[in-house]
Image 1: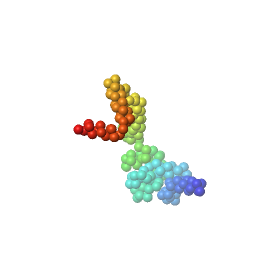
Image 2: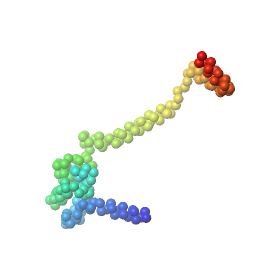
Image 3: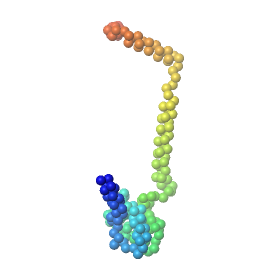
Image 4: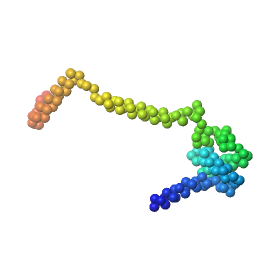
Length: 171
């Protein structure tokens, strides 16, 4: 049963890129170009769907972009030129992997900064735990010993005597 499920999963994953991309609609003379087209369609994000690539999206704008990618590839453009063309029109959002620049530095380094802040918090908490309880002064220790003696004396008394003592203290 597990093998059948694994086989179905692999089959579903291998056909996801070709779910929308029809080989008959985008004929290439070279199989390498067809692979480049599929890779570009998976690498580029649909501007409307936001969380789907061009290969998986059924949105009209994704179909238009697939057609444009095909057209640019037929004109002999490189992968970088195709991506640059789409970025010029739609911005860096069309990429799943934005470039490392000053305006995207927080996007790239944000997870690392959060991780380091978490480590610092854990380290600080552990240091406070390791420091333990501060030593009592002599006065505090004497007071604690006196309270312990009173507590042990009252524990040894008869409960009725304790209630009588409480009633006397109230009056």
